[in-house]
Length: 411
Image 1 (cartoon, rainbow, N blue to C red):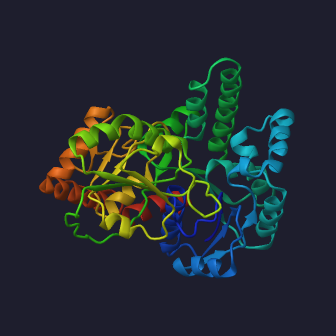
Image 2: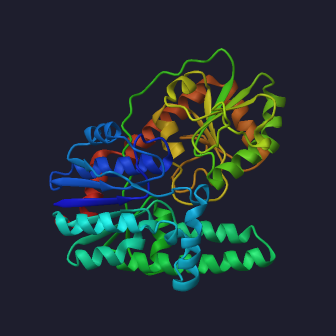
């Protein structure tokens, strides 16, 4: 079996939730003996070197990495691409979530690959790449099409519309309806759909009457002792321009952090992750809401282990979104006790006090952080709960069994 994997970003190095999940799915695909070759075609807004492609290919058996096609991942950082998206929306009814990924250059490379190479399965990673369904069906009408949904994408537009008023709300609501129509059509066109959680799978069933397969991420880990640090430092890791993360951090710094400092005056908090713009010196441009005493924004870190080593716990305040918060799973893998909001725990069958501590109000969140800081046995219990969760729900064997069904192997 020959698989062509079409994705919205070059997933190496895997430094964001989306790329971590993509990398995991590629590892699962490559681990199946029935898969002979696995080819990745992606876009990138920054140059990718030949050395980076070779390193990525070497990290996963059977992997062939095509040169990424230049295309903006963050559309409004490349404003010359905006008019094309506007025209597609106005004249053809293509919603933003699909139009932003429309690329003549990518279409040309995709069609060439489909016509010139053996392809049995096209694995569409992220809903936006379903923009190319017509091209895939035209070039390879007999191939199997898999749609891997990292989130319920239309739900983001509903949440966005709910936050607006007046004319902006009308426009946003219309965009939400267009995104629902596109998502439904894509779900119905795919031979198999992959969801990141059972909650998302239920949503896809309600939307299009399809059964989605939940393929768990596989996150290999080794148990690491986390001794008490010299001071109660706490950390955050995530995409710092994704709205549910930004909204969560704004809430945390404004409403929760003062309560934590009242309970633990010596506490400090470090915010790490991708997505922030940088100034001329390379320092991240920090949102004003995060500029509070005791909080430091460090931005992107190539290696997160030093941050984990100097931190007692990882905090994951999240508001909105869908799918599974990969930062939660990464925290479990790193052996970090985690405190999160209900939205941060969404899609994961967690129990407050076992695998993580969960609270949605400022006092509850602050209380749980203070408990972790002052209770070493609690930190150890929650840490072990996270490891146990990964062992039970994210093993390679479980993921392989579901992926075989997705690919139609043995069906």
